Image: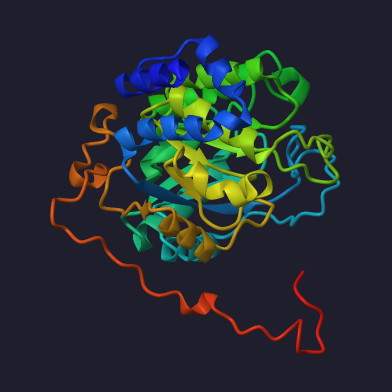
Length: 378
């Protein structure tokens, strides 16, 4: 397929595809899906090998947000029956972060609902960052606190924050239909403030909100121009009690095409499979690992995710490996410092592949159906 060959060649050169090429990826048929995944997988392996970075969310403050983002279960007026609580204390947040680190997470993401932090909030989060770094010095910490005011990014960086997340979410042209209490430009400005302060920028999108293919391409091209180090791709979780509760627009196949398009446009960036993967990719989640090089481990902000152990087993079964804290995520040309053999170099000739331990726990004796008094599994 000429389109895919062209996109692979461009991805290996870090060359931006045309808008028409990106749109064509989204327009491919289900019959072509595995070809699309295989092509984008070549680009993913070129820059990240078979490594998967694990990230862990800690929701520092849940619910009661004054903003009206239509997709969010924490929004103003939300009727979603989510957990609502005020700020976790630094020791509580550190304990929560430790669970993710124990599961293999390389980055801890500290998130708080709200328009943006007050200076007191920044002090509070700074203490939490310092507490986590004291206990886990090799772990990356990313803050996600909303819109930043002057000087706040620098204070977070001084406290030890490695990164700052603020997603664009959707295209500039459709942003006003999703949120009215702040603007698309506000979001761009906050990402740029984080970059100027020396933090790694993390900014992505939400797919499945009723947007067009053109909207998806617009936001991904805008992200390429903004040049964050990490691009999380969320798939809308249509919470009951939110304005977008009826927006069930995604299939597993479309979700994979969206991820492939993001990888072609952002070939050497950490593309992270984020919220909603279990809801929309379902049993095709392992295929997504050929497109992304990063996932969230376990639960999200207000919804439960796949069990962390199931995530680890999925990664191993798909032939990938968890990225260690001693490995730099980004390629050297992005300031990643190189990754030597960890970048997925083929094993030396004669090396024997590691044989995984037998999964005897997967074998269970049938005790229902024929020959028993219990109904069969059918």
